[in-house]
Length: 268
Image (cartoon, rainbow, N blue to C red):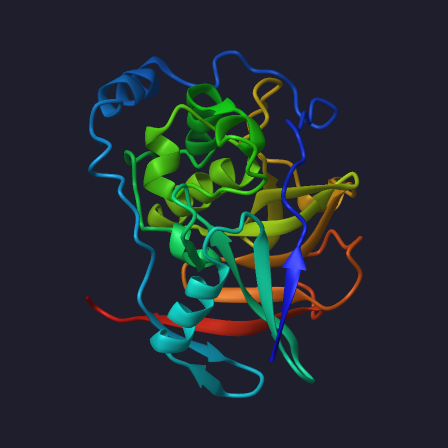
């Protein structure tokens, strides 16, 4: 079993104005009130993050990785600031770990905590809320030169700034809580490392970009219309998929995507 270092996600703000028309009334007055009311629901103590405890199953080999082994990985990576993927001979990458704001490592899907800031009927509202609420800021600027630091979904809602994966983690987690099939995608955008969200809805795939701060429309753009997004892996709270085909694909449901692992949590 090997470990492969993944480049930091350092892509900047993404503007999709070529695909979306601006609608200034996209957030209703009622939703603005919900946003304002929810500002004070979390404290710094509430957003303390320790990751998830559990067992990982490598699906292609039907092998189980214990909490003890996962903790050993975390200890070995402590103090480093990049994403690290883990692989198995003959199978390839099956999961990845990333550092939190304290430098502790966790499985990437652990950052999706099951957090619902507030309930809405329109799936556009979470993206619009995050885009307006959270400032885009590179990790190296926010965390004293460290190139890769991840916020959990609660932390991403609480802290006023963050970069691409922080936006994506909160957005995916929120949509999952609302009942949608949403996943965080890791890859690159137009040549730079990036993270975004893909949502599967009624047989179609949509790219959700919460780092976009203007130029909103009334619907998400179809993934097929966005060829500059090059996905390599994606995850939700329990599963981790790897793109074993072309990184240029815009099809997130094709047979090139292989389900590589499943996480089963263990109660403390």
